[in-house]
Image (cartoon, rainbow, N blue to C red; front, side, top):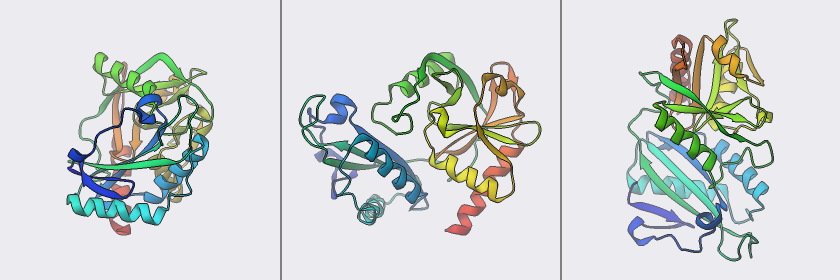
Length: 282
């Protein structure tokens, strides 16, 4: 993590900042976050991240009247400039202000921005395919909290831990009905034999990923057939390709799920096309 951070618009060294023991994100997971990709010193898909954050703040009952997108965007750009970061991730944490126990005394919030460098070029695809496994101990419920990036991320932590212990690169998470939902840190897409691209629908309890949203837009604009629907475990064995998406790593192709092996021709081409669009837009 780079040295300079931003707390409620104030720039300071990370050494000057310590977590208060009554911080509600620490005590109760009463917070939200967004991870935004920095590419060549610029923020990618800021509008989509901010839109999702504001929607999540509404669900959580946070007071967002102080949260001016132009002001926050300017502070992000300044933090990137001061840290001299070209390729990285900016994490924006929003948490309810201290006070109360489970019942908060206020809905006013604070926010903290930090930056980490990453070595990858934005939207570049992985050279080595990912190995997926299935995490089935805990299923993701479908409710109003399903689609928010909460500071309480235990389900994802447990799924990622299972992946680590099992020697997988990532773990698939099921929703409460036993259908494929997402991975521990990414949305999932399947290329079927008829060239249809399938991904779990928002109604399946998935996190509405920013990269997922832009991939679906891009593919439909380029006359590719994308279906947002229920995805069963059996669909994984029928697919020709599987790829994952998130805002930091872009597109990642999957080489295996259990004994099934996959190609990467479409995934690589899609990543190249998305990179070209990013370059043209910059």
